Length: 126
Image 1 (spheres, rainbow, N blue to C red):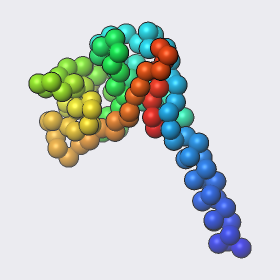
Image 2 (image 1 turned 90 degrees about the vertical axis):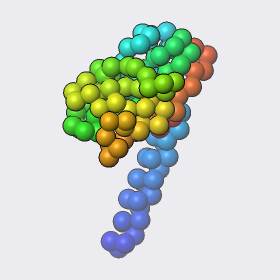
Image 3 (image 1 turned 135 degrees about the vertical axis):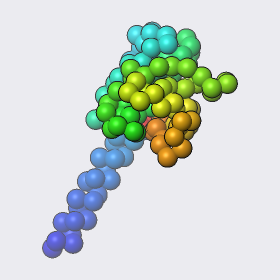
């Protein structure tokens, strides 16, 4: 019986993941200020959003990989060449907004999420 119950619980977990996975409408893109970070809670996950141009928004994990504090939306937006970056507000590690690669410490990485604009709304893929 324990094996059967474990399988039922696994299926429930898989169903919950499937429901959470996919595209999620977050907000009208006009509510995001240019060159400013905002935090969003999407399906129980904290995400930092950065609008770098009128039609360009990046989404990354809100949790700083170095300190585990949920602060990335307060980071400093910048660039390395043509690559957009975010610097952690705590220890200033610099991450690529596209890939999550850390330029200042190769052992760290920031989770990134796909974004798209649909009918004036930002959608994030988890």
